[in-house]
Length: 349
Image 1 (tube, one colour):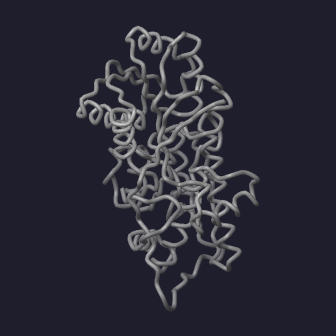
Image 2 (tube, rainbow, N blue to C red; image 1 turned 45 degrees about the horizontal axis):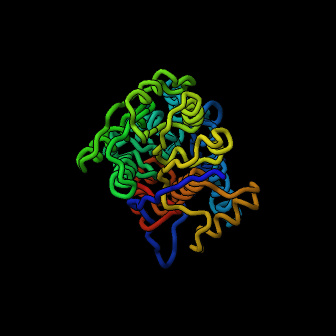
Image 3 (spheres, one colour; image 1 turned 90 degrees about the vertical axis):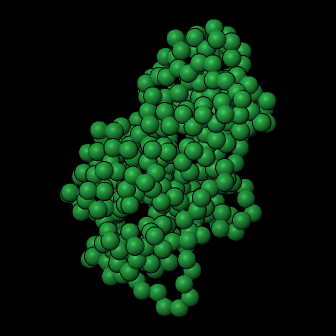
């Protein structure tokens, strides 16, 4: 039997202010309020993009069925590649003239497009970007997932305090996400008295990790912290077994995917990783309503990525409503007025 252990993370929340009385609904354009969406719909990160898109589509469907103002979504596939992300965002802004974009799904694609949105004064809400360096990058940038300052600290505390680990190796993706969380984890773990004995990087999209894993094997660490993406991690786990590494793995929210167990098999036994506090089995009435609706539409339980896509669309809709219009300035005003809202959470910047 495969085992996986996850640690919940509490999140800072940007939430919705409930207003009693008349609500001003902005007059949309003839073809509806046009919102851009730039996600990895193909490529290695498509598993995340599909879940995000499902959540976005469900939220929009619920909004329209309830008689909400028209909304048109314009999709672009960024393949989770920085150059593709830049092209996608530029097209959405310059050609489609969108006032807001759900995009920069993760840190790798958010980092290069934030300056573009800032320059053009277009609101950008990222479902999953986590790099600490993005905090305060632009007043037009928002994210729903917690910064790696949370995730890296939680895993360092768990490793040292709950698991009793004193020495750990790190194998991380050489991208803003991997670099940021490796720095946070290392600083916290060593401040507690632990030691990071070796840290090895690999290129995003890599398939062969034997050279790095051999160095880790020679190092003798019993635990390996592996901040990376699920397709790469499945190969890391399988190749570790092939090389005879007797180690256990520490991970973060990117391990939260059933495909990891399906592909990695027994190599994933004993892995410990963190995920947001969203729980599809929760008794919270808002989450239960979401899960029931999602299962009815897609035939499966929604994961945290579907939930954050759902939140992103609902936040955009609410920001248009509370901001009193569908311009970038209106949406930005609305974003800053939202309180206590969402299945997950939102952070400004």
